[in-house]
Image 1 (tube, rainbow, N blue to C red):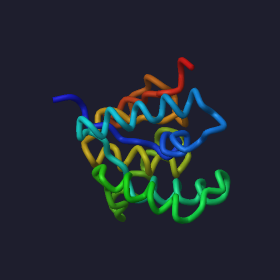
Image 2 (spheres, helix red, strand yellow):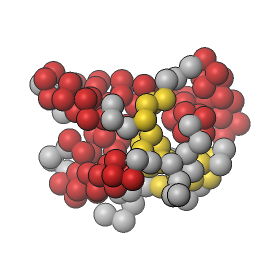
Image 3 (cartoon, rainbow, N blue to C red):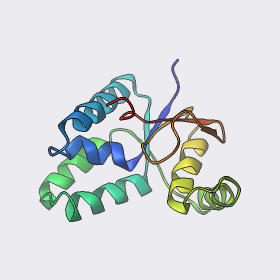
Length: 139
């Protein structure tokens, strides 16, 4: 069995970003692969951040955001709990990452993911047993 993989918000955003077609194709390929293998994991934080960016920056209609949310809910969704927030605080303090990135890492770690797909952290770095992979690094 391959590694469960956590999907950061930027992957969901680029999947909708028609103004960045190369990144959009890369994001869609990652999402398709993780969906078909049933290895993709998201958190409630990722879904909230996606909705915020989709509405404010991408200016997508609410109906389209709802439709995407319906699709993304088909991945495993981790609820951000006080315990995950505590792990995030520890990672923020010990690894010098932003609090919100630390929460993403804490959620990935709690969900038992071996990989985090994100462009926000150092690709190749392993934090708390989670390897960072930037799906847009070679574009």
